Length: 152
Image (cartoon, rainbow, N blue to C red):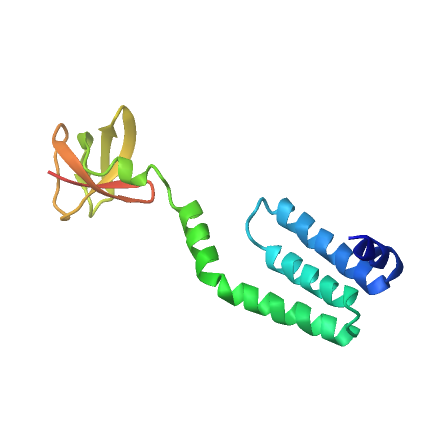
């Protein structure tokens, strides 16, 4: 540990990789853990270890680039799943299957129709394209943006 601290202070390459590591960590924190630069922070640590071991700068740089690429591709599917889970609305499926009351007749061709679901007024369209009269009880089949797709 003492050798690493001495190298950090005395070796400009070790110090440079340490600063790069800190900058990538700050960038990651600034993006609210969006998994943008954590891979580069890890790669900077590996390059810093190479610098402590006394490898030439070209090898440090190659280790940094290779580690960055490998980490990015190795975790691509994980990052994709995390991002997709963050963008999906956790309450979307909650309303599917519930019943609502038509408060304005539904006519898909004219783009008309409103329903009241759990006390909230929603734009609505019929799933089969047919008209549904005011006062009808409908079931929510799908949510399309801010519209409910309903059936009788």
